[in-house]
Length: 155
Image (cartoon, rainbow, N blue to C red):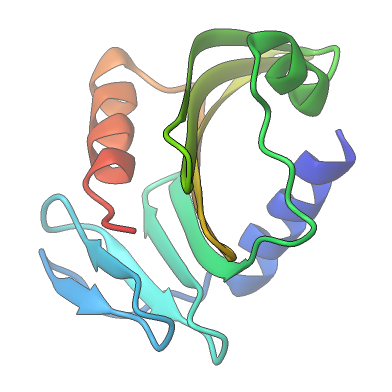
């Protein structure tokens, strides 16, 4: 839950997005982000982190050193990261030697709302890259659009 709180705080403080339309951009760290369609707003901070927003949905994309990163390798480990109010809906982990990748989708239910959380992360050598998307009470259409947006981000 602590990780989600940190991600949520980052999203809230950094979402002063400007610009719109379908764009392909490369951050200072070499991460390429393509917005899936017009309507997404994008902001890059000084460290090369991107925040994409559309309506109540957001995606945070960042990269850094992998020395302190432990990707979840099982759905149980991902469940522990999501916490007690969450439920893992999809989980995939791949380890091909120098490249480790994890993708999961979770619903987090609190009171009368559900937050969709989609996480896609990779560790290649000493480089860690992640894209985390959230949507509050999403429709099936918004869920599909958020999944597409996260899967279109090139690491």
